[in-house]
Each structure stands twice: as structure tokens, then as C-alpha cells.
Amino acid sequence: MIRRLLLALALIGPLAVQAEEQIVSGLSQTRVSITANFDGSEILVFGAVKREAPPPGGALQVIITVEGPHAPVDVRKKSRYAGIWINTEAVEVDAAPSFYAIATTARLFSILSHTEDLRHRISIPNGIRSVGAPPEVEDAARFTDALIRLRTGEGLYRADEEFVAFAQDTLFQTAFRLPANLTEGNYEIRIFLTRDKQVIDTHAKLLQVRKVGLERFLFRLAHDQPMIYGVLSLVIALVAGWLASAVFRFIRS
Amino acid sequence: MQLYLPIAEVSVSIFVLLGIGGVVGILSGLFGVGGGFLITPLLFFIGIPPPVAVATGANQVVASSISGVLAHLKRRTVDFVMGGVLLAGGLVGSAGGILIFNHLQKIGQIDLVVQLSYVVFLGIIGLLMFQESLRALLRAKRTTGRVKRHQHLWVHRLPLKMKFRTSGLYISVIPPLLVGVLVGVLAAIMGVGGGFIMVPAMIYLLGMPTKVVVGTSLFQIMFVTAFTTFMHAVTNYSVDILLAVVLIVGGVIGAQIGTRMGARLKAEQLRILLAVVVLAVCGKLVADLTVQPSELYSIGYRGSGR
Image 1 (cartoon, rainbow over the protein chains, first blue to last red):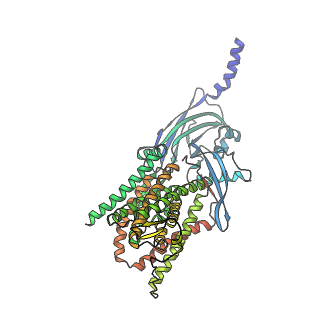
Image 2 (cartoon, rainbow over the protein chains, first blue to last red; image 1 turned 45 degrees about the vertical axis):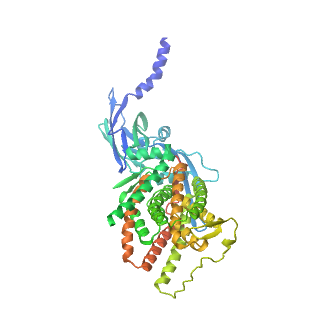
Image 3 (tube, helix red, strand yellow; image 1 turned 135 degrees about the vertical axis):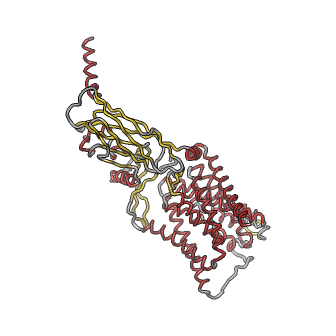
């Protein structure tokens, strides 16, 4: 019995040590609403490190990531064919987040080991997965690089190193800029606490990005009731076209 | 002011959209063209995904043809029998065009095919108009070789003859059916009404009297683009109502300005102006296709999940 208890303690032990320093955090908002005049938003992530005992040696660091919903995408490559540039090769990337941003207290790989990065999928290249490269495409890696490059250019993927303010090894905060071309879904915000390049605590929060009002109504109708949506688009076009010419005829006469 | 388009899922300045609708409206007011063939490529240029641009372009054509159809119905200048035959062909063509469109989208070549179709058609129309208006400007000899209405073309030797009373024709239904099919395919793939193909075909190929040509073609265009819009909405979910409404509003205002401007300008100058606009859009599309792009890679979204 006692032996079992000791065994249990021995198992719990390391976990208890790991949880000695814990993250408590908050967001400036847990919902982002995409309205008709949505042109981006800013979200504030803040928090503190809660500890029972004085901290052990080694500098404490914070990494915060925001990750949009995953969706499969095709990355296509153009080449010249009969004088024009056409898509000739394609690689399917199984799951790429629609949005991915990282903010850190210091340069990423000075505070995080590559093993830990692989385990927790923190850096941008580790955040996307590609399995379905067809055999005739030799350099599939260049397609995922291109995906990252394209989305970085659109402001959808970004790394803001040394962008997290961290005071007295306890209080941290950072701001993420969400661009106007955001897609809706559940965005996961992850906070990692590292010491000596090892992750010592993680914490996750959910940010809901939703179309609201007219945007939501139209999008849902288009996908759930495409017949009704199609008829609606025609009725609106016919009424608008007829009404407009009637109004102008009235003005002119 | 930015406007987030719910289906295209991009945020665009509302003034840019009103401007596009307005410019196309001015052109249609000036020249009496539908303008669908300019609205879709202009939407590509500002970053609207091609499937959404094509489907919404078709929707805009519905709006811009309704008032014309009503006016021609009142004047009794619509040949319903001929319109019906053209429409039957148009529906078949549109349905086939939608199938082609969806297949091309799946294999990632839709942008290419849509752009190439535009290059070909805008190039031909632009050059023809340019040549014709240049000739008119230079006041070359008036060699108006008028086409006789009742000449016997190969068209008249085909079987399945039918009486078209309003047009005063007794011809085979095969040519109008084929013209309808072609226009339907163009509507589905390019998001245009196709009047620029149909009107010359009706006059020169079918030998219809000019007085019923415009009304009958508008009648066919309205129903075919309506059907095309509906099919795109049901199979691709790619019709953006918000985008369409802004374009329609801009287009209506532009058309009124255009009609007034048209009264002050000379017809030859107008036509050469339109030819230049069409050729400029065509040139931009050619450049996009032939100049090595700075980015060879692009992201394609699969299926209709978006």
C-alpha cells in the first residue's frame, strides 16, 4: 500500500514540479465580429506567472501564438508553356491555418529548443502539415515555403519576435493585429512559458471570430439554402435594376 | 470605407466598387453595351476570386438588362418565338458551361481559361471596333455594302424549318439554337451577357430585322444570365449579393451620367474611346499571362468549402 502511494507520488512528482509556475491569462475580448465594414481588429493578450515558491535560476521567457482554423489548400506553381504562364504543378497541403501569429519575449530559437518546437508545433513551418505531395513533384518543401511566403505577404502569417513585454518575470502582455481579410472560425491562443529552452507550462484560450449581422446571414444562406439564396440574388437584381431606372425616369420627367 | 464581402471573403473599398460599377455604367450609357465583359476582368484586377467575379458579374447583367427588356416589351419589339429558341439553346449552353467551369476549377485551371477567353474576345471586339471607328473618322468612301435580308445563305438549307412571325423569317431552328448555346457557354464561363456575339449573329447570320434584334437579345440575355447566376449559386456558392448590389448601384448612376455625356460627344469619338478601353483591358490581361510573374506560386482553395 505504502509502496503504491510512493509510486504514485513519484509519478505525480515531476508534474507537480512542472506546474510550480503557472500561467494565468486574459484577453481583451473573446469574440471578434466580422461586420460589413470590418477592417481588422486588435486583440490584447495579457497575463501573469503564478508561483508557490521563489523561482529557480534561469531566465523565464514567454511565447504566445494565435492560430486560425485549419483547412486544406492547394499550392500551385506556374511555369511557362507556349508563351504563357500557367499552373502546371500543385501540392496539396493537408492542413494550413488560415491565420498564424507568434509573439515572443526574445528571438524564438534562443528561448526554445527545436525538439520542443516539434513537440508543441510553435514555429510557423511546424504549424502547417503537408503529406499529399504527388510523386512527380520533387521539391514539395518549396511549395510549403511558398505558402508561408504568400500568407506572410498578405499579413496572415507573422512572427513578432521580442514583441511580448515581460515585467519582473511575472507580468506579460502583447497585442496581435488581426487583418481585414480574416476568415471566421475558432482561433486558438496558446501561451508557452519556457526556461532553458524547455517548455515549463502551457495555457490555451479560445477566440471566436464570427461573421455577424448581414454578413453572417448571407454567408449561411448561401451555403445552407443555396436555392433560396440564388432566387434572392435574382429578385434583388431585378428589383434593383427596375427600381433604379424607374427612379431616374421619374427624376428626368 | 472598407466593405467586407461575405462570399468573396475579402475587404474592398466601397468607393473602388462603386467606381467600377460607375465606369461600366457610364460605358453602357454611352455605347449601349451591357458592360459585363468589362466588369468581370476589373473585379479580377482588384483581387476578387475569379469564380466569385464571374458569378456576380452574371448577376449584375440580370439587373442591367431588366429595364431594357421592359422597355422593349412595351414597344412590342421582342420576337418571343425566336427568343424562346435562343433561350432554349442558352440554357443548354449555360448548364454545359457550368459543368466545364466546375471541372476547370477542380483542376486549378479556371483562372487561365477565363482570362484566355477574355483576351480572345476583348481582342477581337476591340480591334474590330477600332478599325471600324478609325475608318469612320477618316471618312473613307462610304461603301456601305448593306446585307440583303432575304439572301439564301447555307443557313437556309438546313432542316427543321420554323416560322418566326415577328421577324418575318422561315428558317431552320438549328442556327439560332447554336447561337444560343454559344452565348450560354460564354455566360457561364465569362459572366457576360453575350450581346456582343448575339446581336451581329442575329443580323448577319439569321437575317433578323434590326428593330427586333436588341429587344430579343436582351430577353434571352436576362433569362440566361439569371439561370447562370442561379446555377453558380447552387453549385459553387460563389454569388456575392453584397458585391452585386454595390456594383448595380454604381452602374445605374453611371449609366445616367453616360447617357447624358453621350448626347454631347460625337459617335465616332465615342466608339474609338470604347475600343481603346477594351484594348487596354485586353492588354493588361495579356501582360498578366505572358510576363513572368514575380511570384510563381499561388494558393488555390479547393471545392466549395470556403
